[in-house]
Length: 54
Image (cartoon, rainbow, N blue to C red):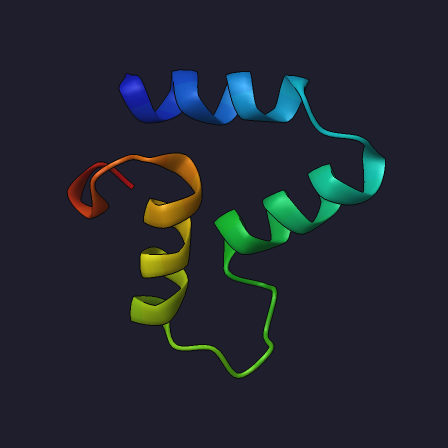
């Protein structure tokens, strides 16, 4: 349930373009040649959450 709350709270603070990118990242359709490990590391730094929670 923490993940759902995080996603919903995050979406509330984003504009249209940011929501689009956020959804693409969550859905795995944002392909820019970045490994999933690199993406998870970036998200942990940005969100302050532990990797196991993402």
